[in-house]
Image (cartoon, rainbow, N blue to C red):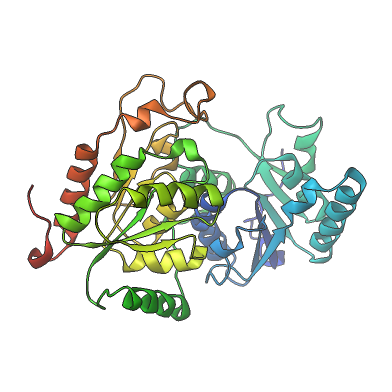
Length: 374
């Protein structure tokens, strides 16, 4: 599509309000932060708004790269047809009244493409759907990027669309800074559990909203005990608020012989950021809290089964991903043959995990508190 790129000197000064659409899950939203930084560097005086699904706002609220957040009410999708249509058009009118000059669709869905069109923005940027979605979808954009099958991490895939139009950044950090209020909340919880201000802790997040990404309960329990007994480091266990996740962690904790700090289902997304910043190490499965820990600069030991670590692994340095070389992985399926159990994940042994955790703790902790070599 031959249009003047939005970073052209003739257009750039006119771009005062930017909307970035990321109607995905928590981790997806967080991994778009380098793209937000690229826009902030290119248009330092523009107002940047991010449109996300309701429930994922905390990933970008109060972020220094973001001026405002719009939350699409996903509960409207469960309404009867005419009520749902009314709610969606009301939301679209809100977008239109906001007067955006540039809209970037990082979602790739039909709804986000329609929101881009209805914004009436002069520049509407998205990937060429290449025949996917409804007929004529590509015509909703003024600037079409070319999808590339590169196998790159999602951070780089998000940035690739912008880079095709001359908008980029050399700062690829994913960041999510907590507030003093959130750090104070955590300090009080740890003090109540008898954890000293300078005492090292490790965060263990055993679950994902997709339970087929979870490891064996007994393996998790054994590693928690090893971290506390042999590593000499207090464990803080976290989980999402969903009842299924909390039940799963409850079963794990029933197998634990030591006394970790139990914060399961008791944290907001941003409080999880405070936990991650306080931790010397994060151990868990592929999940949004794994990405939060990586964004905090905390070393991560993560277990991957059906999902691909090349695209979704912890972003940054000092991380370790454990997998098993099954020829069928990563399959992206909800367990083997729809069983909700992933054999490639369950095949990872507790000894392999403890060895990785022990090595990581040995690298990041002072010599006086490094784990025992056993």
